[in-house]
Length: 229
Image 1 (tube, rainbow, N blue to C red):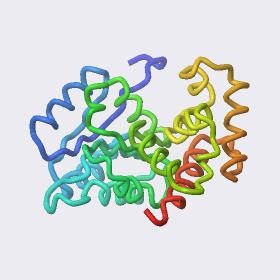
Image 2 (tube, rainbow, N blue to C red):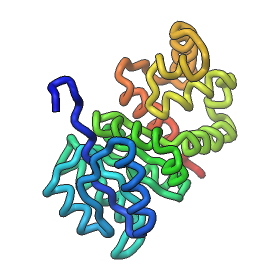
Image 3 (cartoon, helix red, strand yellow):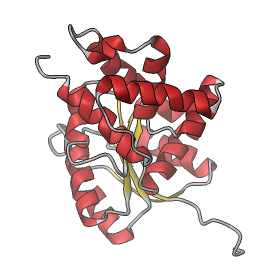
Image 4 (cartoon, helix red, strand yellow):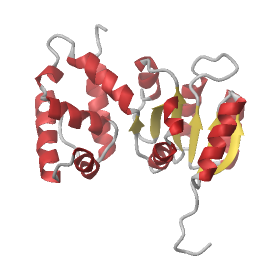
């Protein structure tokens, strides 16, 4: 391998369903990801991760032995022991309880995606690279659900946001940079910056240059505004 080449992303997959696990492995490997191990339960994913120290772990929320929240528990153990290893939770559950459980200690290096994203391999690979670099990724449909619920809450400051500002907030909560938001909405960076300033002003949040801090601030706001639901 030449010095100019970047080594492939090293990933462990944790999924108890054989067909899903092997199908995901093949898709990732076809897109240049080095799947260094697979696991089918809580103990196995921790053992493989501790031994191999991958760049990222992709795993289900519910795994043996109890099929409750093993994936989220394992994610916290992994991040505590190996802070440089990113974790993406891949689940069929939209329940925001799982989101808050995963992100209760912060957002850096965590991702939460719906299993339909397996079909969008490019997005899945981008998410794995993002968390491996210490970034944060949230599924757009999850963010949209959170924003919709909060904006419909009586007295919520979200109700004061314009549709275009809500759109920017949703993209910010996904960890998108100003440039990425501008490209997605076909806007100039200046226009995006103005909308972001308006969002933070209306929500009473301080602007932050770091993407993860922006995501964290948005998620903290959404979580605090969830009281009473």
